[in-house]
Length: 147
Image (cartoon, rainbow, N blue to C red; front, side):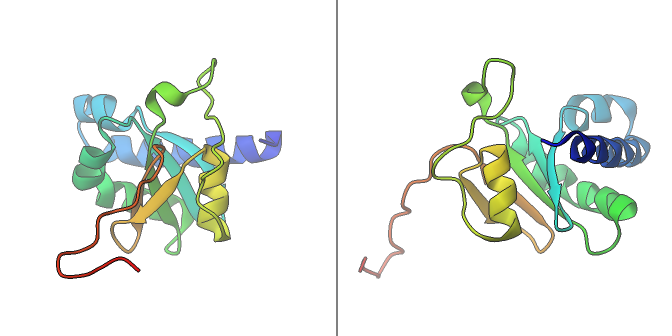
């Protein structure tokens, strides 16, 4: 990542973290929100990585707070993409490895590719959660057939 972009991302993320720290008690922040990492920022979208084992729980409990904190820092049009970290797929120094099946197209796809994310699923109008695990086809809904 370009040094200027990295510095901008770090500045944005430090301001978001300050907002989060003000909104919850210190143990809650330290356990659940401090481990979050900003991975990319483009086109008004902030890609935030959560520990893979806790990403769904963090989304459910703190998703609105995370979105509100990002909006407080970046403005009302900002969007958060919350993604599950790669877990054991991290590189030797913790960096994310790009994956061939990363989501394609548009700003979300570019952010996902930059962070090595294979899938981003929309959960709510302003907060998304993704997985760095390979995607598999979902079974057809009852009463339907595959084409």
